[in-house]
Image (tube, rainbow, N blue to C red; front, side, top):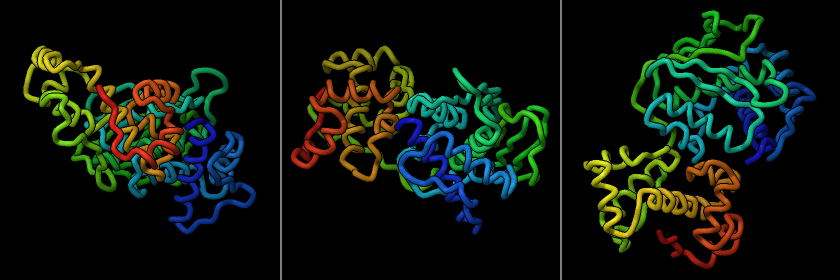
Length: 317
């Protein structure tokens, strides 16, 4: 996924929100398709704000909470905590090399401060920041949080309990805001779709168990301690037992990622541009390099050539 694709995804979110509310897309601002330029996206956002008010952009972003199941949304909202859910959004921005970044500063388990900025070049425009603020609020709702509240740094509330507090966004900066919530049980839309290796792989019981745990959430930044605790042992014991089976923590994580990527590549409904992020890779080049090294084929070739002829392919540790 690059910026053209990510802009298209945000545009599709805005248009779907308008249609759900029975509102037409403003004349001359329609820009649907697999790729949308930055200028076209900004023109649409400005037209929507002019026609329906800037609060419509917050509602459009918030619509991610009510969308149908998709692997990318599940990867974000299945995070173990709200803060991790928001952190995954930040990793997605880095993965797609977005020109904008959401800098998140946690203040505890029930709130964060957010700055929407640009690492280089021109900063995001006002409408983009409002849309992203709505998206983050929607992700928190989809993650299972209750009483989601979005407010500006001066304390002005834009959302409270997930509902708009005003139809008019006050003038002034909107690139810094605060999100607060009451933690709840995560209920992301749809059912999880996690691949798993076969019951007996010959890798060893500890390795197999570790693989299955990592495969429950390949987007998670697993540590040795977390994986060991999930298996009821100390980090040192896990490392020793993996070593006895000829493996290591890093090889388990790497194998889980390529297994998950292979499964996603076998599903033509999952865009190639998002497979690497869903499998836990830091960016597209990292995904392409590591996948080719472990399977002998690029992700694109694997999808178009190998998958139709080799249904039992599974990478080794």
